[in-house]
Length: 447
Image 1: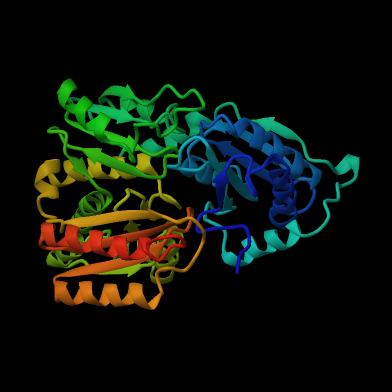
Image 2: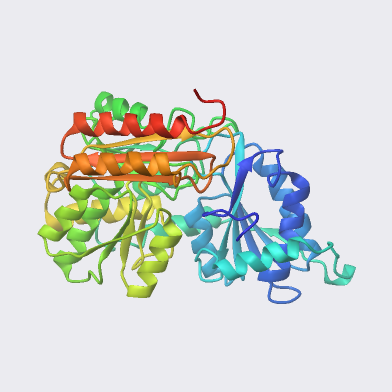
């Protein structure tokens, strides 16, 4: 059991528990001890645009330097950008200060290995073990040094552009790009502009407090309205750290991660480069699975979380995986979920298949899916209580094989997520609300 690490690094409310300056300083030292390859090794640090990022960047610096590790600062940089630069700079690790799609009051720390992959459990446990030891600074002569990489954004922009054929461009395409006031504000608009598109930017004025606030992939309504108002061909919405993306068609209708992943898979199948199954999660829509099987593409589900998708992809040599939230992994292009790279694969697919966005999305008849998040007053395993499991059984019996029920605790927040999916939208909503009520009533103080 891990004490500090969740499903995607360490995350929480700024100033509390594990997201405090003293803890992050010690975390930097512990990470340097485990990830550093001896005195003088190199670790990259990037961050999103939260006001607390400056504080935690300084704390990480101090801890890493105390362990004898050299630091390369990237400044505001998306999570996938840090993963890419970690590989190209031959660093022994990369660290991102971000809470992804959470509001500015939260922050967190994500780690990448030298290969740009999420850390395996054994390495996270080794860091946790070091956190229990007293902090001992290396000899002054062996202290790490800090430098800033001035051209980090340009390097990452060029990498993103390199993931589509060099002769391909997007002249004549008008795109609204919503950066969620987050880490893609200084890269994403430039990628699409340099590839010839007419770009209308929004969510690109971070002030430290507005990340993900009524913008981005978690709040796409503003993008939907802007696409229609601007007469754009499509819209793109990133989350705060740039590893997720959703799209909007010209009529302002949202296109989720399942549909985007289907389009990429269709193109890979067409060009003969698709390997293995497409990998989704327990949250992936049944309609997405059925659409893939209709074109002869296998589909596999994992537990929710990109680390589980990636583990399965590596084990089976699959190249495509993702989640409905827009976290898409194109393993034949990069080592982690990358919102910009994913969009480029979708736009390239439209040209390769000579098809419109709406035409390809129409091939995926998504089932109605209701997701209800229930915030907990305290951490308890409510999902496996007999009364909750009985309610699940009743709901599944009513769906009679024409849908799914999924209850799961969040890996990053004190939430239980109730999901019901099926062919009948009214039935799905009713069953989801009934199940949510059962879960709520199991909390202390509920009547």
